[in-house]
Amino acid sequence: MERLYSPWRSQYIENVDNLDGCFLCNAFKSKDDEENLVLYRGKKAFIIMNLYPYNAGHVMVCPNEHIGDFTKIDKETLHEISELTQFAVKAIQKALKPDGFNLGYNLGRAAGAGLEDHIHNHIVPRWNGDTNFMPVIGEVKVISQDLKEVYHKIKKAMEELEKGE
Ligand SMILES: [Zn+2]
Image (cartoon, rainbow, N blue to C red; front, side, top):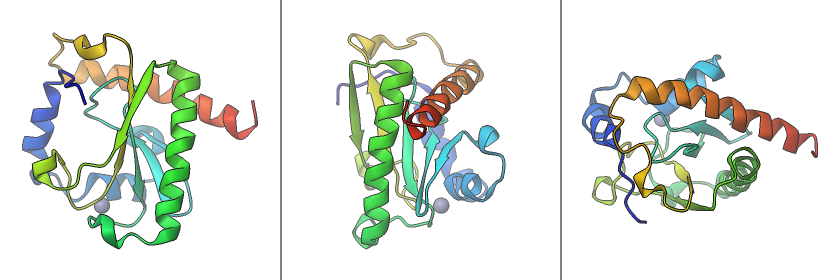
């Protein structure tokens, strides 16, 4: 993947060990999907926006269960993660019209995983020339506002897709 400049990512990597519990589990258990940026809940997996995005519209698909070992995920969950990944790509295409996508897992710190204990499949939309994405913004607050707006766009696209629109 061509490197995107996202200074808030390093802040996240530094802070992730000090978080109170697993933020994916916390989001899953919470009832407030908008506050936690949960986009969609399936039977065994769910879709959530990344709070420290590599790019606008960066979402993650993760199992409901707190599991870090990719080789131990059961077939049904793996299947649903793939289905939800496809669903998220469709919704992001509809909502944000990117030129491409990077999809994938980072397994282990050495591979760039911030949160190792709860597996998540990254979906990162890409635009031609987007390596200059918000190059001067270092403030997470600014991004959070943006996140809510993108959250609602993608959620609306998901609802339309489910209605067959
Ligand atoms: Zn977890």
